[in-house]
Amino acid sequence: MVKEMKYYDVLGVKPSATPDELKKAYRKLALKYHPDKNPNEGEKFKLISQAYEVLADEKKRQIYDQGGEQAIQEGGTGGNNGFHFSSPMDIFDMFFGGRAQRQERRGKDVVHQLSVSLADLYNGSTRKLALQNNVLCDKCEGRGGKKGAVEKCASCRGSGRQVRLQQLAPGMMQQIQSICHDCQGQGERCNPRDRCKHCQGKKVVRERKILEVHIDKGMKDGQKISFSGEGDQESGVEPGDVIIVLDEKENETFRRNGDDLLYKMELQLVEALCGFQKVIKTLDERELVITSIPGEVVKHADIRCIIGEGMPMYKHPLEKGRLIVQFLVNFPEDNFLPPPKLAFLKTLLPPAEDPAITDDMETVNLVPLENTQNRRHHGNAYDSDEDDGQQRGVQCQTQ
Image (cartoon, helix red, strand yellow):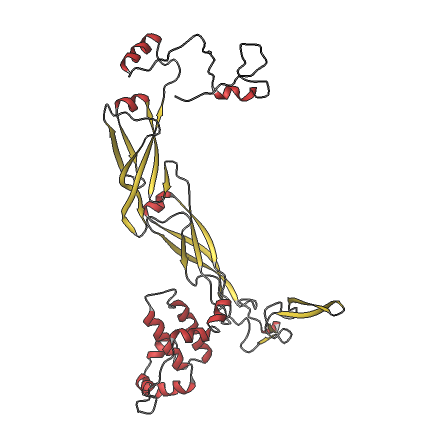
């Protein structure tokens, strides 16, 4: 009988747990509550480390079973020489092979691209992503075979690679490194009869996992969302992360520029000259009415903006950028009015400045630019009236 169950309950094991069962429990809980993955679970991570540090040591475990946590604090003698716990991070590093080695023996990150609409980034969204991951086989606890059946490969001494020297010339040697043929680069060997039937000796099995991806308002194209430690698992290797990269789809109506939204609005000439009312439907299905009063002339490519109707700012969703509106004025087709009405229209519009034409000026034809594209190889588009062999250029300027 043990005096108290606190440390056993923390690790989720029975008082009869073996050292391997303690390691398995610690591995699972330490990765789950590591501060890098759960910054708010620091005390939980600390308690898990303390429980494992005591129960993994035979002498300390015996003291704990007999006297509980108080006996550990008093050093098992009833005096004041209490046991000092190691740093939780030091225990974690030692368990996974040391800090420097752990950095080298960390699994690869898995990157997935998630296609999102501009409306998703505007309103926020939650998407579910199904992944197929490698997880440690629970039947053999990630060993790949029966307990004690997996041994370090004698040929490569567990490195998974063999090195041999090859002579290129007298006094010149080359070192060649190759995968160990005996263990196929695994660093370990196991008799086929003792291999785990569930994972076929691979130590891992494929498992389907559903991740909930929370897209916050104001996130941007290319922004990354990380799930720490959710990558493929390998024996003796810290799992990498699953990284979701947002890929914004093009929107037919709006274009994003930082926290601003750009919107192009077409106007007829009569609206540009005489005023208008227009409705803009936003990405959250609201309808905004904009008005130009009569007498306020809107020119082609003019730009106006609406404050506070752009994209929500990331992590500050109540603040928004600008909705920038660019007006594209559509002019009428040729001969849209008969000559008498055109003359009347001319009297209503501001007067144009008539140039003074003299006899020494040259009159030329003004043609659409696209009509000249096929004439590049047939001489100059405009030929001089004088047969003097000289070419004259004409410069066109948009009014």
